[in-house]
Length: 64
Image (cartoon, rainbow, N blue to C red; front, side):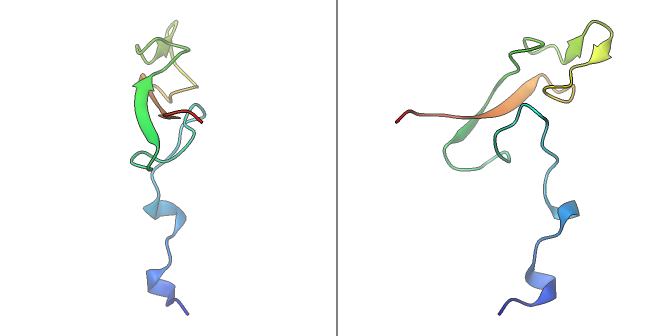
């Protein structure tokens, strides 16, 4: 049985952007340029909603 202090909480996890398929560092994933803003982090004068303004998304790699 896990102790309450051993359980992860929402504030322990990194915030995912809508374009991310997994948390950064997840095996089988990698960082890529955002396909919507092409890495700029902006769509017009507003932050890109797909990458959260970072210009990067976490995507699955490999193939099956």
